[in-house]
Length: 89
Image (tube, rainbow, N blue to C red; front, side, top):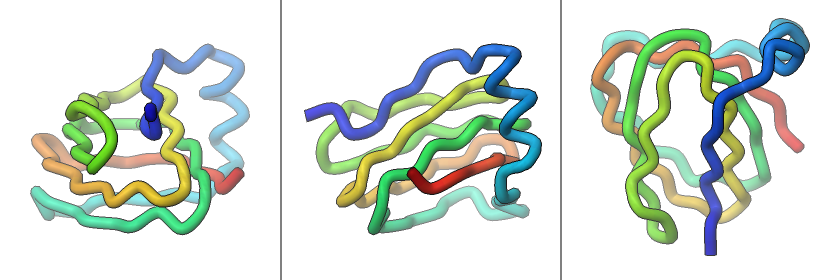
């Protein structure tokens, strides 16, 4: 079961995402979250590896479009502070 899907965002997606909510990791190097609904986001800056109970680790970086499905217990190992624009699906 693939519950984290990562790919390069299109220019159109990057432009549309500017109206989505903003999330910033700050100075933390680890973030844990249980996703209670599907979410998509576009990484604006930074880099991380997201670990979950379903997928192999997924590396994300600026310019990536990521979808995370409901039920994922995500653990983010953040190597460079993350800024995301996100929207629940």
